[in-house]
Image (cartoon, rainbow, N blue to C red; front, side):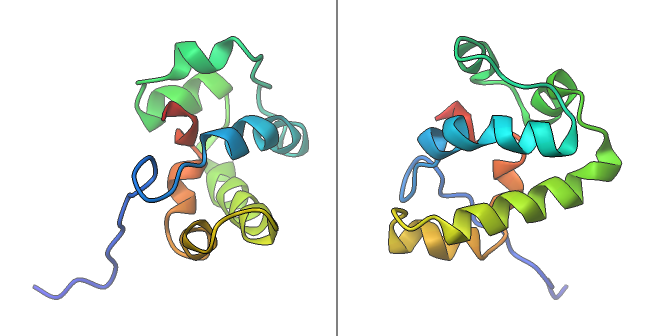
Amino acid sequence: MAYKLVIFDFDGTLADSADWVRRTINQVADRYRFKRIAGDEFATLRGRDNRAIIRHLGAPAWKMPLIVNHMRALMSREPTRSACSRARATSCGAYRAAGSLWRS
């Protein structure tokens, strides 16, 4: 069986985007009209799977491709990100950003 796509998840090991997500998620929430996250909520979301976090945010499934693409674009433009993180932002790693990067 030939695979067309492989996704590597190295967030929390080679790259750590938790701080970036904390700084960015509420502006994305405002743009796509899902629930903003208060500072103390990050701790309660830690350890939840992506579906639980997305459900908590009230982000409908049909918006997820828009949200993911927007977050990926924001991350790739972040000037202070490491080269490793920029490479991740242009790969499929941003899909995890849409749901649960702040876990780490």
